[in-house]
Image (tube, rainbow over all chains, first blue to last red):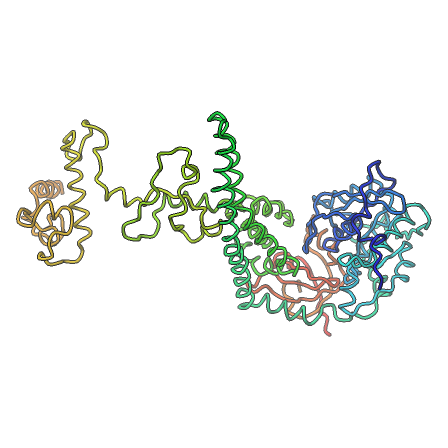
Length: 562
Length: 76
């Protein structure tokens, strides 16, 4: 097989952008997930996003190509099951076909699901007869042992039919030729009219399907079994009661593991390069500038951008390709299938699992992905709750806030490394001292280990330090005493009680003073040992007479009122 | 019987549709039409949505949706 790249339909340079407009408008329509966007990309050389699930294209995308000197404007329409449905994106397609009056409509048809797809072709033929049928996924059909008689199909439909495998670029030159012929009126399509007028809607649809079923059966040979045994076995495993969830967990874990460990190294590198070295360099370059210029440009714009790139770019560059891989295998719809019941219990839809997973990469992409959910209510739930999948960019911020408000794991006395530096232009002032301190939470690695800014020590540290008198001489202690004495009384009581709490195990006196209050109030001075429960005045087992007079007075009063 | 009672692997022919509105239209567009065949292919591990083979492709319906589709068992 010889390769002639210059004239090859797949050569993107062939489809130069037509500056002066175009001569014909070509619409690409078809059922969802038949590869319309792939055909569109093959025609125009563009890279419109295509995905292995229904509903990837929502609004129409346009591109231009030139074939034999004629400019074509191609419009990629969202997939529709029929032209009758009036839901959301299906409207976009119907509206364009009926009112946009394209010169040629390419109906992309899934060769493995001819019967259903032909129903749409027949419907489109009711609207326009300038139609070319692209029998796509023909390679898939061959894999299933299905052969389609395209000549017979063309005769039945009355329009040109071209077998394509747009993924590999197979059949695209023929398709271009067919579009050309129809656009210039070189072939006169014989329009097949189904007499549907006057029929009730249900009967019309039934007639449509009856006709498409007849055509499909007469033009297909082989493929008695609708699904391959390999596919069936895989499906059985992936939706198995046990293995389905095991595989799901492993894949989920794998994607995150690869993202986290894979991103750590480039993230560190970028951080060192852009934030540490780059920031110093930028400051140096702005040496003579006034303080507000360096503040705005170097500390603000440059450092902010550099930090975001260092932290977010590597994980995203790993997460999304992995996710696309799962998508291309067609695994994601199985996840939705497995989990739908759980989501249904919360009033949501199983497809939300996809948009939530996507949200771990980027919430904007996650929210956009919710369009695959049909029901407006469930879609709204998916959009609102997508927030709870924490994206790569938000991890560092949330970990920072978490370590400020919630104490981390106890590790004895914390090293006090996060000391503020006096130099307010030191980069540490802006992103926190990061190098000499291990990330407290391992999840921080997701954003590149060094992304966790240092925080104040855990809340416990505050109590261990000597506390200054907080509010000045007029603050009032618990006893009503004002000033420093009242404050000190409070602190003493606090230490006594804390020591009591801590000394749950009796230890020998000979071990010497251990706690602060033991040091300050040696055993001999103390009237009662708080560790001996019987002597504790408020312990229920204590001797009544040992209780303070105030308590006894209260008890007497209570007894009297009763 | 209704579609949700169809045992796994069994084939049936749709006799009538109970659902209405957009859902009815969607089901019909997918090929769940009176007179057309349907086969229960697999059930979700959690028991609820079931995948049906209709017109050569898998369509997943929740039990509440499947309840609205009346079918007649085909013995093969």
